[in-house]
Figure 1 (cartoon, rainbow, N blue to C red):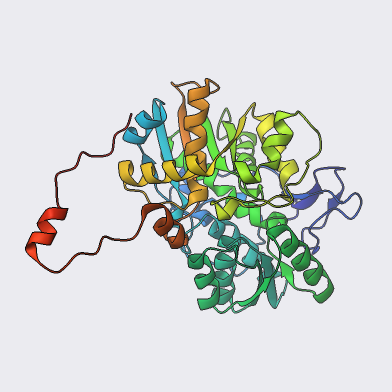
Figure 2: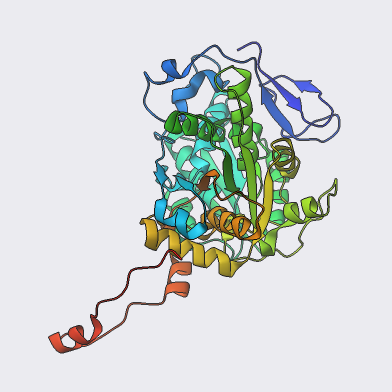
Length: 410
């Protein structure tokens, strides 16, 4: 694909798409993958299986490349009327990324990122992770026959995610520090040892994640008014925005949604930056939140996220751990959808925005729920409690079983 290039979002310098770089060599800015708008239509897409590669014309991987896939994408879009009533909005949908192969949205990016690694001839891949990235990269590396190295912040990764990385054969290294320190280490190691880096600073990762926007238009038949996204390292909200921009640029849609970025209160540097109308980020040195997937104090993709929110006339807010936990329970009890804490942040942000008056109650909202409930089983037990133990007799059981009112939406 001769029209494909890497472009710096800061100084507009351009680079060959096969050059292994993760930031601009001129100014140090973030890179994005650019291509001419393809001529494909949704009628063309409809002839293929529902998933990331359904939209292959928008994924600038060279013809003939070996596609590394686990049939990712194609995740359900649930209309959640009971949850909408609880949150105070007219129509609310959950785009449930927990239905991806390894249980999170990261698989969308890894199918493209690992495919690119293979096409470049890489033998090993690496990442730093709060959990989901490591699980996904380990699985896709195993699928492709690549060696996988993972650096994790010690004691900060949920057991469900760690178990996945280990079982898929990754070399897992735990460092006594936070995610931001782990990312700096893996970036340095990747550069010095020639290992292909697949954190979201790699722009090829985001080319897979942008397909969520295409799926939403496919599923709804139109562009939603608002798309709410949890923000950790901030790649996903910018990728989804990029997808909507490309759809409009190709003439397949006529408008774009407002993006709503939601962070946990204990790890909210982007929200604080936007609240104060600053031009630079002030990192959170010791981020802390029950939502481990977004416990990041110095998100590498913050310029892209800020651009997406500002260009879409979007919204931003932070939610407390208490709000996250309450929302996680309501999503499960009202709609039967089990999400990890970080996922619940998007819905919690919507409820908070409605209550504050910053969001129209008549809006149609899609909340991206990024990961499955089973990603963090320890958190579930800590907030819900252990099962009640009783003697094995009918009287004891009868005393425990009493009619209860269903969960309330008000």
